[in-house]
Length: 428
Image (tube, rainbow, N blue to C red):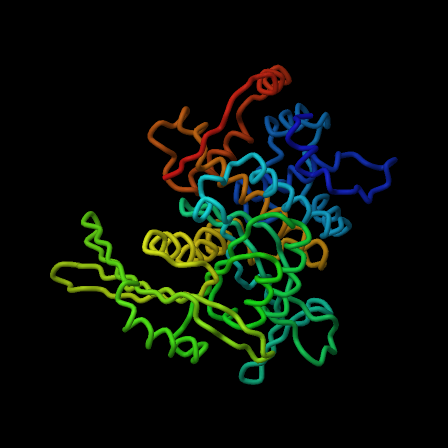
């Protein structure tokens, strides 16, 4: 069995009867990864597309079993596995990338790992799916849904790796107050600090989190934050920023990018005082970026970005903090949720009805997405396809074809395991 699989799924404890096991635990989980890596979109397609003769031979080479697991086998195992253990699989994968310094080049100011926090929809049902469903009533019609809050490691070159997940769900069907993204964030932050106590984290978040509780939490945990600041949020802070920014003309900088006909105008104020509703005092900085794009005959397109942060702002770092700290938050939406929903991973597809199984399929998706990103941006593919593979959809198609038809023997496996090679990533 290849060395990559035992560490990847090592946190999992097999709940099955040892005397009745046909497929090893790592083998069934590997089948789940293939479901997402090849972007099949549904468990039933595993039997149609992954159980080819060549696919079964490769599975035997990897795991010593003649047949390839059925989609129902994967579903039944997912329902019995502990989601907390699957969460640890995701955390361990991210930890390995950090420890191996894969992401060191993408740290903000050569120190902070940027972690974007945001929520998204996961599953929606016309009737109650489980006692923990969230509910929403519109025009007399009630829908039942499940949301999730994600903390993802994001980088300027487009990586978006899941670091920690918090499911937003009610404690029961008769909950007097529904769970929400803010309450889920407090739970997630505590778990994140416990699991990665020494990781230098910089949070990049939307304006929902601009407030005293988040500021205090980051102070207690030793984290930095860059939070979108809307003009009508934190009125006292906004007013003080506007007043002082007019006076502190030295805290202004303009950068022009001729290749894109873009101009960036920065202005900032350090050491603003803010007292929250709990009468806790905070020292904050506000950074504003006005971006102007000259579109020729179409005129200029102006956009304003503004952030509140606990980082010290200087002329040398404001551009980096704004663009690689604040604006990078969109990576969780674009390279994260959008790809997982609309790029073939099927984030909003109900791979299983049971609560535990649905969560475990979600974690399998996160692992597969991380591996897919490493494959896409690695240099191994460029050695085979010097002109690239085109879209991610093409790459998933090539993976499916390779699994279904390519030959892979025990000798091939031994040669790969014995070879010493290094995978380099595209840092553009």
